[in-house]
Amino acid sequence: MEIIIQPDSQQASQVAARIVARTVREKPHAVIGLATGNTPLQLYRILVEMHREQGLDFSGVTCFNLDEYLGLPQAHPSSYHSYMWAHLFSLINVAKERIHIPDGLAQDIPASCRKYEQAIRSAGGIDVQVLGIGTNGHIGFNEPSSSLQSRTRIKTLTDETRRSNAAGFGSEAAVPTHVITMGLGTIMESRLCLLLAFGKKKARAVAQTVEGPVTAMVPGSVLQMHPRAILVLDREAASELKMAEYYSWVYEHKPGWQKY
Ligand code: F6R
Image 1 (cartoon, rainbow, N blue to C red):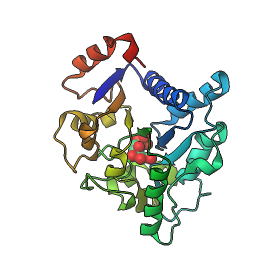
Image 2 (cartoon, rainbow, N blue to C red):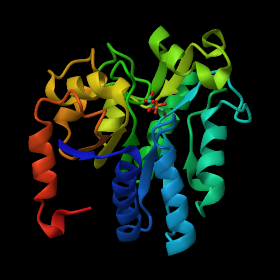
Image 3 (tube, rainbow, N blue to C red):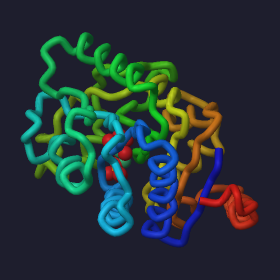
């Protein structure tokens, strides 16, 4: 795992944006996995700026989102479809037919999940998967106890996650109980996993993910088994890492060709 600690979330998002932008420049037909929530908002803002000001070209890029609430129509203001169009897709030149988000209204959920997995494989696999992390260590909506080899499927949200996501729905009771999410096995097949975490409330989950045992009870910890996982953190999210100073030293002394 590579741990990059930045003074604040803005600078951390800049690093993450450079990693995504480099992938898109080097591989115009790159496949990018995307997350929703508060964490990647600054990253998406910077990517939009790069598109507008530096001509970063998404016309050949294919996108796959991690997850979607079950039972919400695409047009629902709190659906992840709405989120993605508001914060990224309508602001860059990605082709509509190359945007993939799990179908929250799928009737045959297992078939829809199999189709999603097949679409990822047909696109050649994910080059960079952007991830956030829940306070309980979830990535995607793989809640604690998720199989480390799970594939895209229906999951039941924990009360902790429904509480965290209540703001978008007005109340915890209004947050859907079920979601469709890429599995941990699906995420682990991405060539690069890029996890962002900001703020004190993520510090425990980050410490468990990086320095704890690999366990289904902290789903993010499976990234310890990934050959290329980069975690970009602000200082607060890194505040419970025992080896924070070492990670910072390593990043500051990277040879030029390895820098982002
Ligand atoms: C969202 C997702 C989740 C979030 C996580 C953190 O697509 O997959 O794992 O990344 O719940 O959410 P925020 O960023 O709102 O703290």
